[in-house]
Length: 463
Image (cartoon, rainbow, N blue to C red; front, top):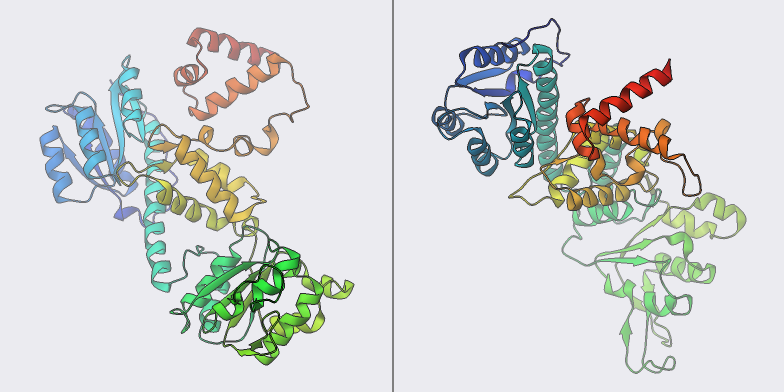
């Protein structure tokens, strides 16, 4: 018999009515209970008593969440799960299994089920799982809409819904139709080149070249010839004329990344090019007229560099006609779920989509991201590459993200007793398994009796 208990589910009501649930179970009491709990929450609910009816409903109506018993006739819950994963990959699946058949639930999770419930279950437990899945579905729907909105704006991969990024988008819309210089400021990994590309490809120069130059990577003795070109015989090895990058970008955009690393003598020559709109190749007496837009970027404090004499004030004023400041990711954490889901979609196999667990998303949102969006993208790419199932868990994330601030693993040179390391591993496994002791024991590779004994020991030590 299914156990009941009082309790509510804290869900934002807006958008819930758009989430649909299909309950598949040949046991009337279980099917009706799942239906009633979902309906009380405000969800659209349909029911089926066998897999044939379920597949008909899936073909005719959109289904966001499927709750199915594993022993449902005719095909069985596992086969139904496989067909849903193949034909309806956006549908989240919760499997119901009888007590003592946990292995079947684990197999279902491996095949793509988002969660499972063991009969008999408490109503509160079903509500909690529905709560989590509904919030994930609502977030996914919102992200799909926002991704489409951003695609139509043509910002070349720039992603963000925060007020800070909205301001950036508005500036891009304004400056992309003009030709004056733009200076982009921001920490490493915030997307300065993406902003530059967005300006170029959103404006009238989009059919012309976009030429990026990393000033910090250029060999000092070759910077001038790389930027301005050279003529045959200008120096040893100059066996033919070569166009410089500024001339190559004629009619288009030259993006000078890390402009703060440009040597002071080259700064004077760059200033002259910007003022006169012409370049003189190394070894030549002739000047070549160009119509190149210059966008510069740096992670340095150029105003401070001007005060110390490391950067020319007149060049700073020439480049700083319009300034765009990109916020670090830690100052726009509301964008993290959107960015994370976008990167998961980018790196996942379309035939086998994966999703972030709620705990993993919480860890991503809590982290400060010193490497900004680039670090987040790398973390998601690693997680997708190392994951073995359709759900990305905390354990799939880089080590720096697997522990909260209060529970960081020790530094390399800090030695902890084995008993303490064991305690941390057990508590972490319990968090990963949402308190399911049997699942935690499986994660740890120990027997459940051993786990219960250890937990009693920790409880006694805390008193």
